[in-house]
Image 1 (cartoon, rainbow, N blue to C red):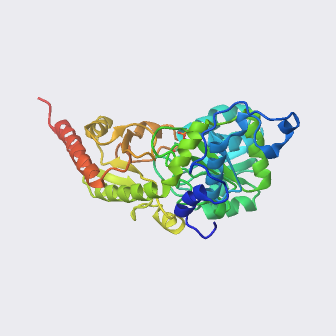
Image 2: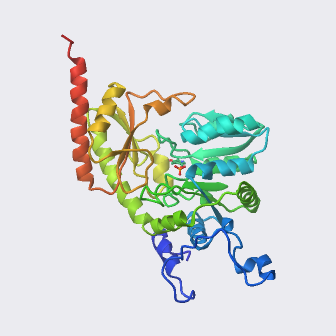
Image 3: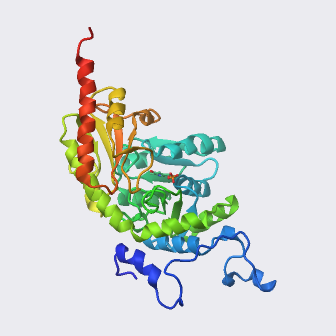
Length: 397
Ligand SMILES: *Cc1c(COP(=O)(O)O)cnc(C)c1O
């Protein structure tokens, strides 16, 4: 189905002919044990799995769909997006090796690198989030084995020139692993740009309904694939058939939700960027964003998350702003159908070099609500923020 768009492929995969009369969707098979008719059949791989850890119908259908989406020859599932990032790093590094990555890395992955991995002899060198490809390559040393790419990076959304970095890394014999959660496997195809391993938090847009945790790992190179497959097997990594079934259901509407949420997010971002209370909106699809040129060249869409830098003001005012919103839930994660807001300034303290921002940093996730209603809600939230700023400016009696 190479000539079809992702939007069609994600659906057409469910309705292929020649599979006999059946429901549209794969059966939900809950199994640890799978029974065979004969002892000899228990050794015959062609008859399907003999044990649930190998995965049943829904996990296999999801693996095939994500492999197709990412253009990966093989796909493995993990119980969370976090495990999808950490597992290939575990599989592909050895004591004495070094990982190079951005200072704006997703926080829990940073914790894995600096706590788990560092005490087992694999160390990490962080580059500044806005580093060029040459600067990233200059961070690598003789010991560097792997470059972990997150583009756009977490919270501040800096973009990396991934195609150029993949070429430069390969020329030096370094492996590349990219966290592709922001692009949801749709807006950017890391493997087609020369990246060795593309991982995603399926929790976000594939799940799409804030009711499951799941990750995916895709790789084409046979050597890399063998290492990842062996580590999955050795660690006993497996996912629930119910969660896989839900993620597969989510994939059928992924392209529509992703595009609609991106449209709304850009509307909200453009409106916020013009507000006097806001210093900057961090979102690569905004023409004013430093990453806009790379985004425009390489990406066919955008995630619906925005970094909002307030113009001055104390953290308490930023919290009041978020609490004054009635349509934005206060909650982590993104990619679901609902809008969310979080206060992110405390997370920036974990970086080696926290960015110099004009004020507190908030993150908004834009859901499938009417963007006009979201903007009206933000407008009344900003009134609360201004009221607090004004009362702080008034001399106390
Ligand atoms: C959310 C997220 C993850 C982790 O996904 P979970 O399923 O929540 O563990 C990994 N990378 C990025 C960039 C994320 O935003």
